[in-house]
Length: 518
Ligand SMILES: Cc1cc2nc3c(=O)[nH]c(=O)nc-3n(C[C@H](O)[C@H](O)[C@H](O)COP(=O)(O)OP(=O)(O)OC[C@H]3O[C@@H](n4cnc5c(N)ncnc54)[C@H](O)[C@@H]3O)c2cc1C
Image (cartoon, rainbow, N blue to C red; front, side, top):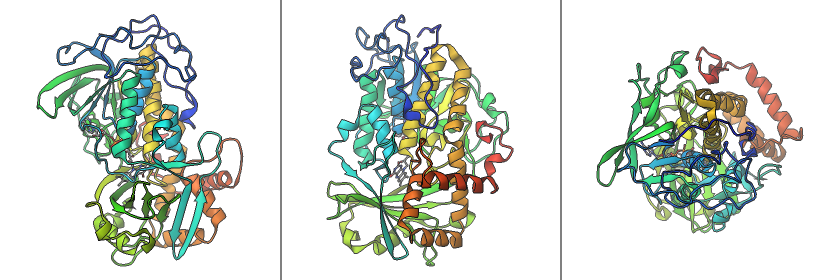
């Protein structure tokens, strides 16, 4: 069993508005013994010059004994991470990099297919760069901005200049990307078990009232969540099960989050939920310098729907084509996304060469829980990150960056908890999320409610498409790339949106009682 550390590290907390702003969580103290659990690869000493306080002196890797959990059922990890998507792998990387004993279970084996648009915005690139992974993206397709198409017009907008984020993005398939980040976590010292599924939490007591995925929750539920000692995990190849024990557990199992539900987390149905479908197509424009979004996709009756179609060039002979729909409003719940996708394929500009004949396979889809819709984000010793916490940006459906960022914020809180802060430090994670995102997501949710009305949607898009300046500022807002150091047009427009959002009814102000009710 791992021992406790008396003194918290003095490392400053990350700036919540820009979770990229610090290296990582408090480091495991140098006087502690080297980590006992074997990493899937030995950790290299930090050589990137970004070491935070305490990091330079810590010992990791060397002398660590390779440990098989099958024979060490009594071992208690500092942290167990369930799921190695963007949220789980980033959290594991930052914790392992700080010297903590982290185990990750991922039910699939990398590389694996993952339904996604494969678009990385500057926010996501920043996080990958901070994990030392930008060189690994050298072969990926780099793009410079967004082309918006709608109502017969087309506008090209470059990513803005920003002090914290690059002015470019990448497209890279999740098939290739997710294994890279998981491997990075392993190299930092995390133990990553692939093909291993967490099938049930180890709880100190049964969940008294296991909330269904869509049930409202009582005000005191965060405090009422059970303590989780780890998970029963199953090797998917052999079917054998065993227990993996840990002091803290990170729920990073994606939008369906069965593990989170079994702890008592649930999604607010009054928050927006996206449904999206994507497929790959061969295209001569596979290396276009802009990703493209279509803002006037229509349902079968010809009605413009609240959502968009996209064509993201991948630079490898293919483009990722998809449609996303916001089902926040009752009237859109019946829309069939497969038919929407078929219509978009028929209707997309011919220059892309998108057609049934160039399809690389049938499209696949998934849910996008948005605006911090799932909660409570922190229990006594558990945290929800990424889609498991409903962290997708309601403005644009982006979730990869928010997976990386919330994973990093959770790593910070758990580092504090492990360094002596205990359960209070875990609870702090909920506060950090509120501080980092809740104002922005409230504005985004208000925006979503507005555009759920077809008339407003049509009016907004057709007005926006008349002005490149307006759309460029809107892109800055929707991609959460406002500058902290200037009050330009985007920042002013965002302030105006904040004031408008203040006057619109907001379900987050209803009597919910968890950290987000603030
Ligand atoms: C069609 C579509 C297009 C999208 N396009 C984009 C886009 O272009 N850009 C963008 O930023 N976002 C996009 N998103 C959103 C993005 O995919 C998610 O927000 C992101 O994947 C969230 O990361 P995560 O780590 O929280 O979850 P996931 O990426 O879902 O990772 C969860 C991981 O946990 C594993 N897992 C699940 N259960 C268990 C278990 N019990 N035990 C062990 N492992 C488990 C899964 O195998 C998976 O690897 C899109 C989503 C969809 C559906």
